[in-house]
Image 1 (cartoon, rainbow, N blue to C red):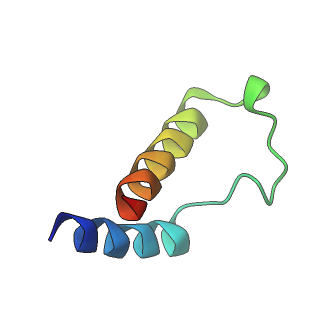
Image 2: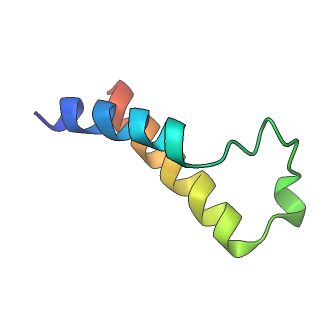
Length: 50
């Protein structure tokens, strides 16, 4: 159940949230909100793959 929830959430994130790798964002120069989005996407991806 938990894994399925995170897989659905990962699909939503992919369509709604911006992809900073395509924008070639430098993490050292990223704003706090950008770092929060990167962290959230990493958390959801990690839980979707477990």
